[in-house]
Image (cartoon, rainbow over the protein chains, first blue to last red):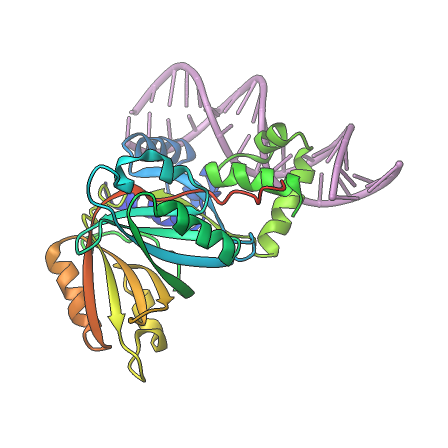
Length: 147
Length: 147
DNA sequence: TGTGAAAGTCCGCAGTA
DNA sequence: TACTGCGGACTTTCACA
């Protein structure tokens, strides 16, 4: 991970669809060299994938919330992979504190959101907080100061 | 937003670097037609961007946490755009409940994390919860059932 | 909105420093 | 690890349905 790798990461985080030749112009390296570095960043797992960032509201997911789960023990959400396949569940974080994990949920309606909490109720006690707005919903990972 | 748009969204969420010709093969449409549809999805804001998904730990951000802020009033975090420019702050959500907003923070060390909470202290009262693991950290937005 | 064809560009694979 | 050069694939623009 040298400065060149970080330059490539910066560009690919801002626009994952940049061609190798455009990347090569921006970082001042030949296209094959860029391709090789990007391939290694992917292979070593630094780059986990490239995703189109979809606007939740424009995709119909107008009801967002964070759900804290109290579910220690054998019925814990974290012991059942099924929850991670529910399309409304965007993120699952195991956390410290008085709950087991926090889920980020995006539903098409209040009814659909309530339905998620109902299903979660079989694992433990869900506690919902609604997201009213998201002033910042993504930020690129910047290099440590030494680069 | 017809079934074809959703098919393109599905592919581009899974791999944002797919070429138009590869997309055209997958959705059974000519490359120019694919390019035109993708251009419109971008222009209408359904697609907000394309981002390389960087592994936080491999990028050195080993300390993750959620910070709830109690900061109602003129010094609220949400009234100052500066916080959204801090590189450690990945996400800001305004929420319902007894706090004003929840920040997702990724720091290179405990010291750096503590430093973020110190800086947040000037806006209100931060309450931190550490993220121990992230069993699910991204999920594509699926079309509503009718597609 | 969609297709098909043409021109320019890009990608991937060599061989080499 | 990086560069150059080449053949084949791709992107883009256009006319047209």
